[in-house]
Length: 421
Ligand code: EPZ
Image (cartoon, rainbow, N blue to C red; front, side, top):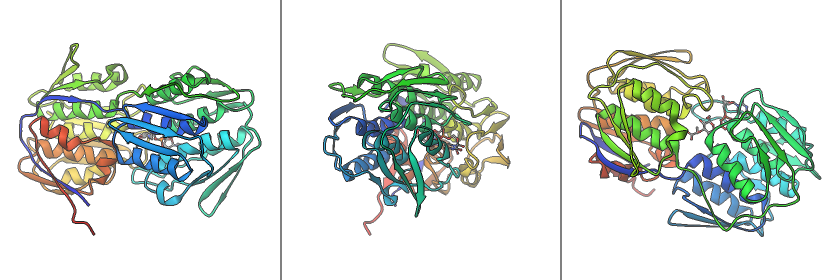
């Protein structure tokens, strides 16, 4: 397993281009299963999760090619409808193929994702919604087996505004007979980007980005000549936390600040200065951030995917900050590792109290999940001395060439490749 070796304390200055959004790329790649044709997707980031989704589609009979940020997917000859456990266990977002497969082929065999480091992460709402649309679903040996002659439009209410649940059912509804209404839908920008791709293929969708989405089923869909996905707001937010924690001065290119209001507001409260220009968004961190409280919420609230990164910034803040995680039940895996670096953090249930310290100290630490690994990188960049971060395959799942981007900003960072087994 590759490791990252980081020597902290360097001034970080320069510019980075934000890559395409992982959480838009994954549902949009799954959506190609809805239309038997060649799909050309631009700004697709080179990430492990993206390659896993590509592998899933290839195993179904699709053709998938990646070329310099462009992903070409031909789903004309898809003739298998299975997402097997060996792939799904590495990426729970594989469940996003369920809705498209049932909608287009009337059948699917998708492994239950199983838990992950940050929580149990059930998919019951995905299954309930498809059953309401007329799919017969049963669980067998850890697989979701779904069958239907034709999905029917209906009204679905989500107890929780599930992001991939909204995406799965929105995709399924595009080819259903009649109209589907999803109430308490997720409003994330990645849901809107997926809706825009579906609409560009001829789907009839209204209300994406609000909590009520209406989808009128159509007979078939046809992709546009090409489609460019949105920038990754969580990568952009991660670089804001890097500047905020280190007193850095970073120009973010290609990011859409409209998706980051909650994060930018909290960063400003912490003393980060933002300067918008035609080149991009300049982010200037304070010498020492102020301690700010945050509570993660569904969009447009403060994103849970930014909680760990913000905590690293608060670890060296002036004062004490209270961080409440309301989305996942176990998203504090980074706390124990930050403590190894000298952070003062106590956890009670879903609340972490962070008392800012003068300096963190480099140490050997271990990544446990995608955003936790980003928080360890931030801590290592500002710590005194050397940090070795193990299991950085977690990081490679969701950040495109983060070590290269940090090198260009002046970080002392080196990837230690693991010896081939
Ligand atoms: C999406 O996960 C993102 N992944 C996650 O990003 C993100 O953290 C999460 O949304 C919340 O914003 C992708 O988009 C690929 P949820 P998802 O369904 O859809 C519960 C990252 O770091 N729930 O919105 O799986 C669930 O347990 C990843 O890029 C049910 O109870 O999240 C959780 O507590 C991590 N039943 C809450 O809802 C269900 O059927 C929100 O989960 C579905 C969800």
